[in-house]
Length: 102
Figure 1 (cartoon, helix red, strand yellow):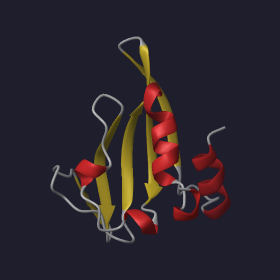
Figure 2 (cartoon, helix red, strand yellow; figure 1 turned 135 degrees about the vertical axis):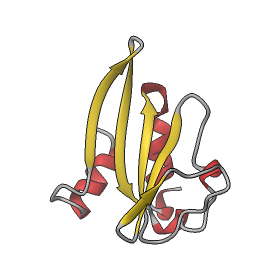
Figure 3 (spheres, one colour; figure 1 turned 120 degrees about the vertical axis):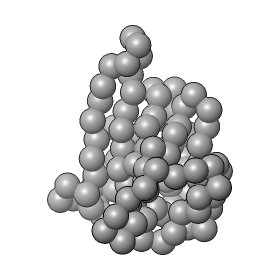
C-alpha cells in the first residue's frame, strides 16, 4: 500500500479519500481525492503536475469545485482530484508526504 494512502486514511478514515481504479487504453489510471497538504498551499497547479503521469483534474474549494488551469493556485482547505498513471504513483507519494518527510 502506498505511504500516502496509509497516512491519509489515518487522518481521514470516513470516506474523505476516494480511490478508484480504471483501465484506460490497456494501462491503469487511478483517481485520488485528497486534502491539500499545508506545504503545498500556495503552489500553482503546474508545479503539481507531471506530463503523462500526474494531472490535477479538479479542485474542490469552499463547497464548490472547478477545473484548474496551469496558473491556478491551490489554497489551504482545498481538495485535489488527481488523475494518476501507474508510473506516477511514487511521485504522488513524494508530493503528498508531510514536509518533514522531504
